[in-house]
Length: 426
Image (cartoon, rainbow, N blue to C red; front, side, top):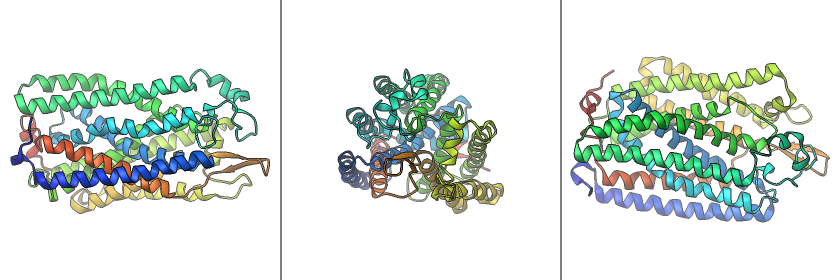
């Protein structure tokens, strides 16, 4: 279907914006690729982790968007129909996210023996934080069947294959419903969502285990996949609030996106703020109660140095407790906060702490220090690699969004619940 200028605000201007974001994204990612090359040369894992943190942030938002699309079909959520089209444009970027994540996989396998690769298990000769080779570690030997580089690569293909497949199928159902007006596409989308929710949840769970939890392969938690899901949903809802506000103020949703939509998104943000905090605390509480050395060290290094003094992660932890949970929770308890600029401010605040939460989960690690014969903990910092990769991936995501938005109507005008969504009120 060709672009419909009657339903798009400023097609020429959108084209120019898309080109600008594409150029910015390419330039920033080229700079980041230079950082990866330097990281390989210097055997410094911080460059690897910088790419991983930024990729994980943007990927988590896309995953949250995908789940919101599927849940809107499963629960027949009429109020969400107006916002579903921007989400459909956003998840069109999954195929580009796969290409952006690919360098970590390829470099991880090609330079497995290099300390640049933060997945230390990928090379059995690598010296662990205990001073012993990975291949002689009893916990690694018990997990070696899963922590295999070939199997790891196959799982990578499966994860992105699942996300791209369901995102594209759901997009096509919605777009074809607009063109043909046949209700069968709505029914098809519901069936896809029923199966896709389960399959994508499995993929999200194991992706979190592979990419984040395995950074410290000694550690394990059965709740970690749920943490990443809750964090992704919370971040996606924040992004939806911001996106809806911008589209209603400057874009094609003027007069369509109403206070009722904002209010309901604010309610969801409150719910997932509580859910994220509940999962995060429950994981901590269970590990603290069990007091198993292979588990508690993960929290210890996020609080104290080897000598028992507080490290930088202790302050980040306090920030997540009070800034990431308590402040948004209290503000969102008031109904008036869930409207207009107030909820947008809370969403921006919570989104920043979503990024900080990813730092807290990915960046810390025990590193063997041959000079002292002990380990040191990688501390919190914001590296230039984080900034260039964050900007580059974000710009590519916005470019993919604008390209998709240029080709389709701003809202799904033939969806059976579209009138109900337009007339949504608090």
